[in-house]
Image (cartoon, rainbow, N blue to C red; front, side, top):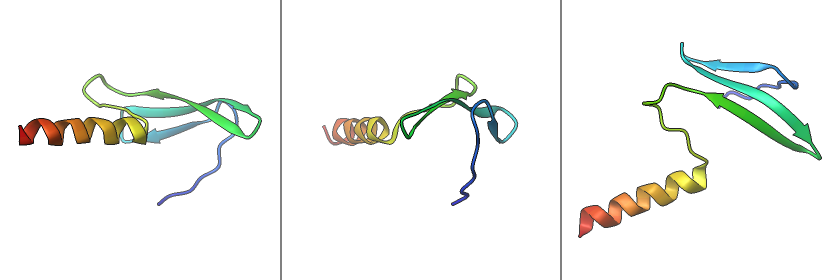
Length: 61
């Protein structure tokens, strides 16, 4: 795991086409803006897990 620090407005780049920007830092909470191509799905982990579970259940039916 890579751990890096960023300040407000700074950007992290993943590959050639994914950019993560720190858009706000308030009360110990960091908010990110993520720019990625439309074919790249971006989810919070709890949403990702729910999607995968729904796919698993659908495949079993």
